[in-house]
Length: 613
Image (cartoon, rainbow, N blue to C red):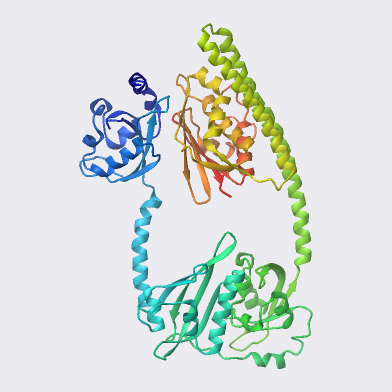
């Protein structure tokens, strides 16, 4: 075993070719090697520090790092450690150290791989954000604005200190949603907040209301209460909002709705929706029964609310442009947009308006016609055309994938057979024969996968499977075993054994094989290819990084053509410009994405985002 460790430790020349910042220490926590970037960050000379304990190089780290290193030597992966340089260390930026076990060819842990990443701008801004939140809380207290959150599943209501002051209660008061509603008075305000809460829970409708609230000592104040529902897995699980005391700045509204029935006798007799809207505030002053029926809300719910609140997408309704038309012509022409009904369903409408009162407080009479039927017909027609084009594109992509994948297997067979033909040693011939059997099995798997793709496209109800990423990385390595042997290539796999991704098996196999083949094919002349695979979890994606020390490419020059069909950027006789095109289509077919970061002469990093849904 000692002989094996020494053999591995003595073969660390490849680290000098790595573009990332990496250092390797043994089980005695002594530095064995480091990449040029790591040495540059900390201004070290490898000849001077090789063999020294990591704590001698960074004496200020102490037991905190030592504990994490011991965990890594016990087999734990991707342990993170934040490093802030002291004046003695010449590094200028804070950084995150990623600790992973370093294993020999037998799976024995013989040290730790330390990968260093400088902290991004976004992470630096997190500290500033926390300070800003503190200042914001102080300003909210002055402005008498409080925040609250209602957990529907736990029936738990939480207030910030400012809310207790607005309600006129001490911080010992235990708020519940029922108690909070009871403070609203008179009954009209209480019913409004009840209805708003129910609409938020059932239909996801937000609210913004100005209501009266009776404080604990009996004082009646005006408050502006705002609520925003939040969803998880399609269900409203919590509501967040604010409440502000606006008593000193708010003028109570006067009710003028009763006048409209006399002024506009046809208001309830027309066959389409009508709304009277205040020009200055944009709030609804009256609606006819046709509009009430169309939207499904009670009439009282619609009144005094901004009409724009019900528009599904305000960008499709240019309010500034409409105001300009009204100012010039006293009317605006029919505009198509969409509106949300009580059940949060989309209704396509055509709305036009004209000014009906020319006094100081101008009103707009808006006609609202339901055009959902013709709009849906138009959308279905466009969808049919788009689906036809997508099917043709997928058919072409499938044909290219079949050709490209089978070519990879054929090339692998050819290389292995050539090695077998020229090899006389019994043991080596046995290994090559075993590799040929593996190649045959992988070809069978690929053909099975291609059949699976046909089945997937024949049945859109089939779902992606939860797959072991490392198992498919192993299959991809077998697919390119001949190329790795021919080029003396090395794959460094830092992906956790437990990591799973959602994908179609055939697509995942094809994506990994194409990316690894690409790294080998575009290696630097005179250099053996080194390919590093790592992964990280994001909120919506599992991200696989494939990094190589190859030729790299000029993304400023070729970036927009990188994933195009038949586009090549190097003078390589085997280049056909198909592999990355297929890979991008397969990733996007699984609702994922792929990005590239490359430097000419240093290498390329592809990041593949596997969607978790």
